[in-house]
Image 1: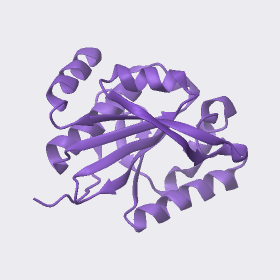
Image 2: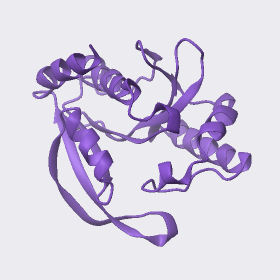
Image 3: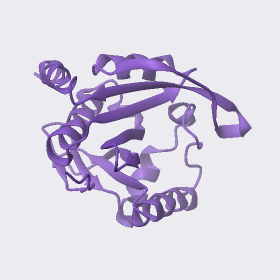
Length: 196
């Protein structure tokens, strides 16, 4: 069985995931200026529209090379952009990928949006693409993110020491989590329970 990544629109009640395009620059800039929200991401928040444009163009170049598959998170009723996420680190032979680069605008944090976005991405990965493993990782300093990843049902696997150079040249440790196809039925049930 081949493991080919498709990137359709993924629809939920609280969020719609659409493939990223240059049309999204303004909406992402509008919600991506809070530095505290980006503190543990590899790059800093947007300080100008030009930075947002460059960020989108870099993501689209990675998509063109089939290395990343970036999405924007859209509020279904109003078509307002709420954030971004993506598939990355795809290992075709192993039927594995990572969900990452996830960030939400301040107004959408601690809502059902992230939970449903993860549910949609995980469902697509396991039930349509045929993934055996989905990975999620976060900065070891980011306790909130670690708790959020554990809350969706991912298993903590360990720490990758001095794993990535991030903002201001800081060399971070990354905490690695995973969900496998064997875990997915129970994780799915838990996520559906959280979403009501």
